[in-house]
Image (cartoon, rainbow, N blue to C red):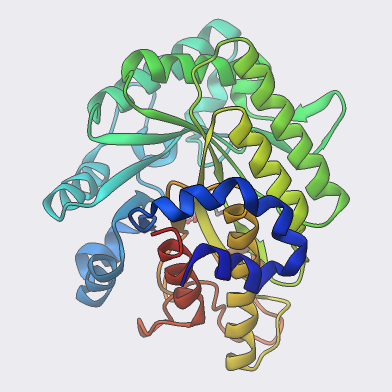
Length: 353
Ligand code: 9MR
């Protein structure tokens, strides 16, 4: 399948105006977009079926938790790289690329970081952490989600940046500091800002797209090192996707000279029908619209889902179903059988080749 068919199938004629600049690239052909997943190390090393699925389907992996502060930093003076090292070794042994997630986030912070009490201390902790972590995997982790979810959940003028210990003491400047420190530590690494809920056809979705574009423009205008935007893609199956808004957003990001990655795709299905076939079809169609809208403006460099099997997903922690049925947000079911979502991903990643 060619990209044009994929895009047109999902978007219809309204997408045509975005296609023209990309036809030459299509004709040139190329490799399929590398696909991958974030990894939980327990099943990776404890369940042969999980490991087999990763090896069968993936060219790239990330870590669901092992590179976050909560896992790496049991206390202020200690780094625990054991799990992250094991995943890195697995990736290298099997020729998989590994992405880094994440260096500056509000979430998964160990309690001791609440003791940070000044701008100087925040600067010191953030920069020394980034130097240690990026330095350890220098030349091996080639792409980092340096700043994760910098936007306020519902950005408003004057209130664009999400609260965190970094924002509390350094304001929005923590973003620049994190990026500059990562660039100094590994000048070859791709530096990414990663965020969610930018595809929705809602006022909030529009506000988030605008806030992210404003943030990117400001950083680039000031010469801050930044190479790509990670569109997470935790899609809400029952919330319409703003296809043209998303395509325009990607076109603007591309015009800034930044690459696009899909970093955490899954489809939150708590409000979708109970019937399995209907639900799986709705999940796949939602992802198809999302990918098509992105693909209409740019070839994303990577497509990663946030997990590969419904057996291991964060979704029920926040979005369990009222009817008690298990969530089905990912490309393989709980028995590792491919679902329509896997077909959509494979069609999309191959539509560029
Ligand atoms: O899926 C992750 C879950 O297992 C963790 O408990 C949680 C806190 O570390 O983070 C989840 O991953 C999030 C990711 O790091 C950033 N985007 C949203 C993801 C889902 O909540």
